[in-house]
Length: 367
Image (cartoon, rainbow, N blue to C red; front, side, top):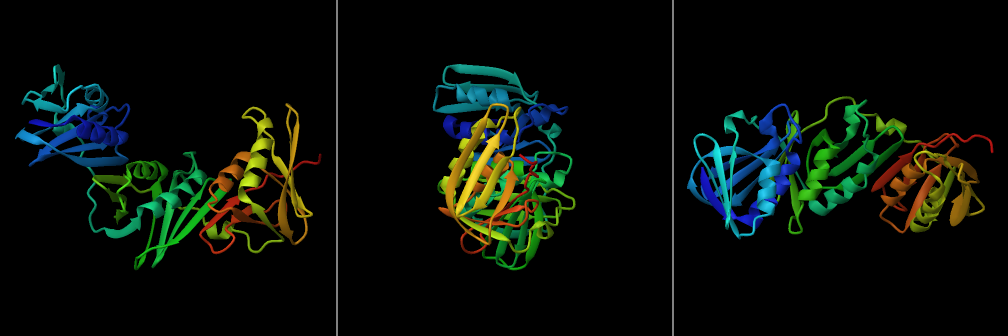
């Protein structure tokens, strides 16, 4: 195999493909990038057995072939190259020579036959989603994804598609996030995409990309994002029956300024650390939210003006969980629905159902 191509284009491709390369693996080939020629371009693939990223780069191909090169080493060679073009030559004994300007490196490649085959997506169902919509929906739910492997199914986001409605759901046992949008689609689908995969998709979306094409199979899903193909396994298992977790109705409804409430809880949180944990106490009454917190460091209190209907109530909550949900709100004002001190706190838009965030309250001890 022998080819030459633009150094910058190759560097960007290697950087993005490397996101799917294993940092350390019992199979050395998985620590590398599979490079294969294809006419007037080269195909680069990274795969860690969970997610694969594949892309192409224009090249002048002198000899066809394929090989696997260390992603870390090859990436550093390209990054530090001081020439506009770079040449790679791999002989039949897997001896690779990389030439960039006056620089020349000789390293050993790995036989491409040792590289695992990427999953094939067949008999798939396809949907197309606007890039900006997808970014918004993922960013407003991914904060509630579980990081615990106790329930692997909750380390991803559930996609529910019912005709023209797309719903994303994330849950970690302490909070729940739901986002709804309309899309052009017919039929129904339900699948769970790992949070890691979705994070990579967001990084790959470029300024000029308009849509992301999803291809859903039984156990895998692929995405067409600009010049990249991403293949990921889907998560399997019983996802939380989230509809039964949403409280019906509300005893108290609060309308508050989103930023003012975030800023007040943020100030209260100055006394809360990983070592000194304490819930934030919030009493909603007399059209005000009275916030207070006590830790070994001291005490803090704050007041936020708001509109309250249905009486008053005191609730306790984890400051981080509450702030994560509030920061996902994309409007100047927010509606908060409350039941009893033991009922999840429901955070909603002023109108419509574009999002719903639940935060499980902390049971307060007597002061």
